[in-house]
Image (tube, rainbow, N blue to C red):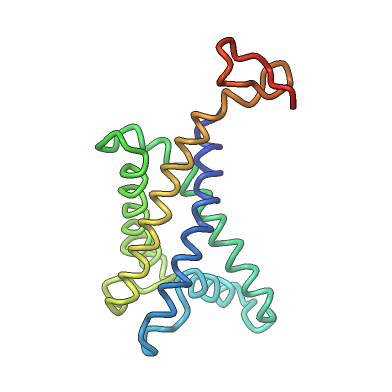
Length: 176
C-alpha cells in the first residue's frame, strides 16, 4: 500500500481523537481563555479574507471548520511517512508524538503567523497553548500508531480477492 495514503488515512482518523481531546480540554480553560480554538479561528480568518464571512450561517461555518481541520490532519498525516524514517526511536507512538509536536511548532510558530492567519502561539495564553500542545501529542501519537498498524495490516487484506487468514500457516483465504 502507498505509505503516503496510509499516512493520510492515519492523520484523518487521528484528527477525530485530537478533536475529542481538544473539546474536553477546552471545557477546562478559564472563561478568559475560552475563545474559539485554532480550527475555528483559522476558518473565520480565511472566510473573512475571502469576503464570505457575513454570508455563512453558523452550521456552514462549523462544517467548513471541520472539513478544514480534518483535511489538514489528513494532509499532515500524508507527509508523516517521509519524516518517520528519519525520526529518532523505533516506536511508532513516540515517532508520531514527536511529529505531532513538530506539526504544532511549524503551524503555530511558523506558517500560520507568517501568513497573518493566526497570532503566534507565544501571544496566546499558556492554558490554550497547553491544550493545543497536548492535542497535537494525541494527534501525533495516534497518527504514528495508526499508520504503522495499517502498514502492517495492509498485506493481509487481499489474497485472490478474499481476506487472507494471517494465522493460517500458509495464509489461505478465510471463508468470509
